[in-house]
Length: 240
Image 1 (tube, rainbow, N blue to C red):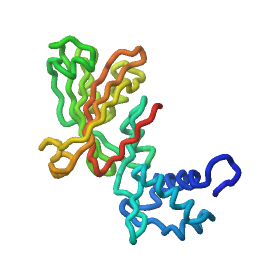
Image 2 (image 1 turned 90 degrees about the vertical axis):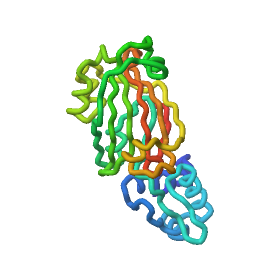
Image 3 (image 1 turned 90 degrees about the horizontal axis):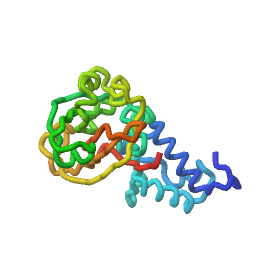
């Protein structure tokens, strides 16, 4: 299991192995993990090495260490990757979670302020707003407001409602692929509507991500504001 002399530090190999255990659902959310002594026996290392690995897992938000009680798996339901290819279904499928997206509302609006700027539109141009609710294993984890240039995507709202997938709906509208060029992350208290949809108290912070997606030719096709349930999702930013 642990390969010494491989050029990869032993503690880092332990981190990778335990990350896989967590992704494979070997432990349940909130469950106490094996003790330092048990982990040292499993990996054939000393406790100092285990402590270093556990410290790294704690920094990543995967576990918490409670003095005198042990190591516990954090209650995060999803590790959500933000990168050039930010995909709701792929994020959940990679963690063996059953994901679903529901269209709550759609309407055509006049572009203004942040929406017009993000999509590169002149103020007053029509935009399509589609609100969605994303769930993982039946638990609501995100609420999104998607904005698209309405003239370019006249049938997008229906395609989204029918497929439950942004990627598939855009493909039906002629966009074979797209990528994220901007993600702005902030923490804030939820509005009443968002708190109700995500089953959260209004006193519990959410993570809000404003994202801009472009097509293969670099044209801006989507501005999305996604609000994540802070206790259910851990955001992971990468460059791919």
